[in-house]
Image 1 (cartoon, rainbow, N blue to C red):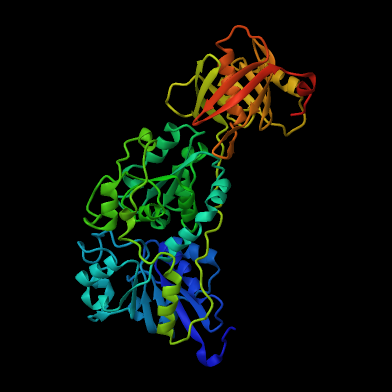
Image 2 (image 1 turned 90 degrees about the horizontal axis):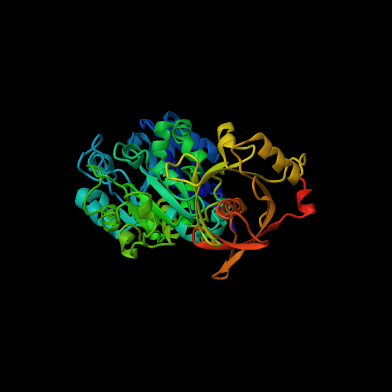
Length: 541
């Protein structure tokens, strides 16, 4: 039963300075779910250069907002925040709670506070008139309590280990990993997550070309790359500028998740991460994901912290080839960053209701699984194809058209590819859709209109194509799915067309039908090539 008695009504003010701080508060908010005694208010604490992105994130949340000046003029029963910075002391609260907004305290930010002290453990922000501002200092691990006692002993007397609600959401989402991968259209591809924190030592500042290096340097049928950017970096650059900066990579297949929830779901779906010194990599390690170190060093990372130890143990990222054999880190690599996994909301509920002087609801408060990610993605309409023919076996690797690798031919979707790509492609293909052409009519038209095209192919289904080759005529290709480990694996039929195109270029004659093995990444598909039948040639495109 819900207790809605007027004498037990409580007001909670959730105060934040940045989008990342707001996102952490939203992960904590379920501790109050189902309780009509609690009124929830949000306010933006002024003074951060990342406040515009924070306001946009707040607007998307649908929360009740109060202007900061108005908030200072009224009392609240509890002030809850995930950042000790800003004019918090001017807010009036009967109780105050401070929670971290990341995994541990791994950085020293030299432009504010005490330059050599960990951000988040600095007495300059934790104390007000010499006394701790917060009545509760919730931390993720006992190691953090020890460090708080080292740098700010008065605050440590109010510290409690409450776990990490964001990690708990990721752990709760583990069974949904395949659904997330399906939403991202990954199939059997390896998903690499590139993690960038914010500031002058971030990956995007130091190595802005790294995402493009991966996208252009790895086969598209074996890998997909996602760029996970810290909300502060998104706010500092703007979403538009970030998208425009990486427009060529996005066009080639790069994924750019939103900094709220989608990033965490993508991390659950990922197979490995490449990171700078941002603490997001600790979440990846806690999930058991392999970590590659792409941090070039600097003054921000504090020696001996969990993040520093993780990077010291992680293999170095040296280029696209270094991602192929990376192994998962030992569980101990993230052990000092997270404690009490799966218990954060339960622990937080007990502590926050204690501050509110209320009996908490009896029902359990489970971590909410992350929603299925909604990440815009594009399929490259033109691909550079490397093909090796050895008898009846054709190994195919495909890359974005802008790659600088040596290739066998360019394969392009007609008419989705650019005019220059359509004019230069040796292989052109299309799927049914318009109904204005027959297979025979369209393939003949393409070869007549485009001299560079050698093979025009109609992709009729996931396991059947019909192609017209300039020298070899009209052929049908049947794809048999592969099976391994109890799973069915299908090769992209447009890759099979490239395999047949490459094979035809090495065989002056053949007796039909012919069986070929198309090797695409770790999988092999058996192709049967034969003369096309009349009904196949008359199919609508």
